[in-house]
Length: 215
Length: 215
DNA sequence: GTCAACGTTCTTGTATACAAGAAAATCCAG
DNA sequence: CTGGATTTTCTTGTATACAAGAACGTTGAC
Image 1 (cartoon, rainbow over the protein chains, first blue to last red):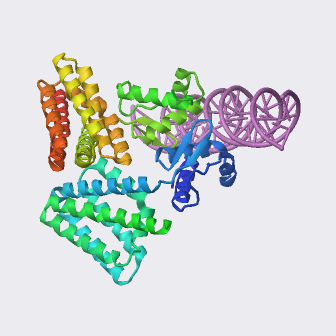
Image 2: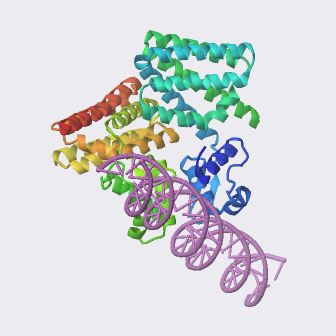
Image 3: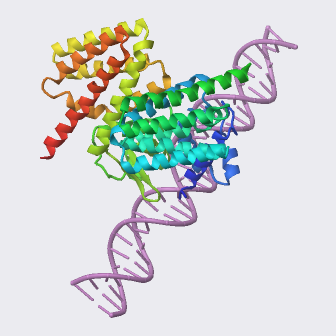
């Protein structure tokens, strides 16, 4: 519900990029987009700037802005960073999380379990995301939380893929349970270690997938 | 050496914000700035967007963009996040850093020592920044490095203040030496622990300063 | 005197016009 | 026919014009 047309366009473009509508290196033609969205170039340009600063596109002066889909290397780097940030959030959350958030976490975990039993991947994915978000919040550090949310958003599309691996859902679930227990115990280091591995394995699974596709 | 006028203006505005030329909540008047920079509103608006996405300003639709200097709470959050990110970088760097970077680190440390002996705060500060940047690079994760650099940049002005504390320079130096040795030993956990404390103490010193000023 | 409604003014958001640099196409020399 | 220079076209970057919403002041009723 943005008021500015430019922000709406930025959102839409972001969705399109995530949906893979653009290839890496594609130029985002201001005129074409303006025509497509039935606006002038001005709001388009402002929307493009948003994409550029969020890292999804690159701007070359006097040349235009180009889509920059992360390659395998950058993706692995992002997954590793996510793993480390999650570990940090978890370690902080272990001593700071409110009882209320702990309950919320347990509830989300229950819904995760239900989703698995129903083999509802989409629902599992949504609940899984919430699970992690509660931990971010539990770290009681607004700045860190924002960084974590941003990266989670950026990795969403790729994170999703690896859940399709056989048995990954169940494994993911048991990792969640472990995290929850460690949080309840206030065992900061174990939370950090488990969460780091939990996210890192996603990167590895994703890497496997990429490798198998490229052969 | 940006080609676009808008980028130059964004840089200049960023400097001005860091220099404290603007108070928290100040509105950035497009017309006034346009006049001041001798350009039209268009490049000003693009520059403002940069500030907004970098978090230094807030945009309220149809109202304008307002300077948002972080308050004490947010600053502490940022320092804590920086401490954790540094710890992560350090832990990764302990096993990944090249011999070349290790040598560079030792060299920078020597120059830090010289700066202390010359009581040259500015030079110490510059070398200190380089010291940390080499560690970011040592983590061998471009994405993480970028995040670290961004936050370092954002905290520069505040980090600087706490170095004026009596004895802080020498303490900072000895912490650097410890980090260097742990890195050489490949003792990842000790590097992480030391770096975390090294940065966290900066936040605490800063907090002390704020508190003492507000009385 | 206070509060609210209306109207004016000011500011942002968008459209269009213009300038300047980059890519592409054409033309000419060898 | 090929290579390079020149001109043309296209695209971005900036300026200006216009539209619409927000702040502010004035006026009038109570």
